[in-house]
Image (tube, rainbow, N blue to C red):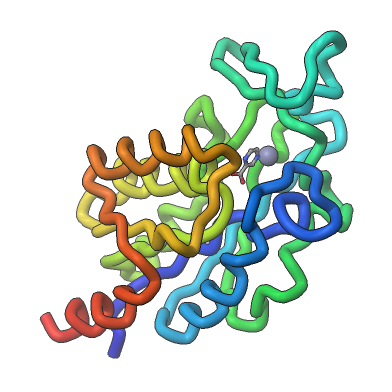
Length: 217
Ligand code: VGL
Ligand code: ZN
């Protein structure tokens, strides 16, 4: 009925929300009820999960003399050094308890290579360690990808750009009110870059109409 539309729920994890607040995102909890309400509209529902080893080199704690949010380099790529977050097996890494996980059909973990950060749900920042998400979506016949979750300026942004690049025949949408940025300035930059990459920026209120229109074609 609603075609092969996929909702990708990006990194809705305690580490970015709730009391864990490892890498706090202002208003992060507000996306949870919006995403829960959207899920029944989609036949295909996937989540991504930031899943770092304790000694991940994106953590400022691994670089003496740096502090969280400092800029540096990692493996030849520019890197923001983060507070420790989403460490494998900890509460911070768990999907948020209010997220309706019963509806999620696949969880794609990323960021487990300690030497490189991994914002996109498709591969790491160096374009290695593919997760197979593109093959999964292709195998399920996806024609439209809708991206929501955390954070707009990093994992939503990189995942959406990779979706455009890896699945060029698929239309990609970011549900803007179902995302929040780490920082409002980089959040604005993300929206501009996504627009230039032909990612459609929409609101959750428009999603139902959009899916119905697509399935009528
Ligand atoms: C993220 C920074 C570091 C995200 C993950 O989920 O957007 N941001 N790791
Ligand atoms: Zn991370």
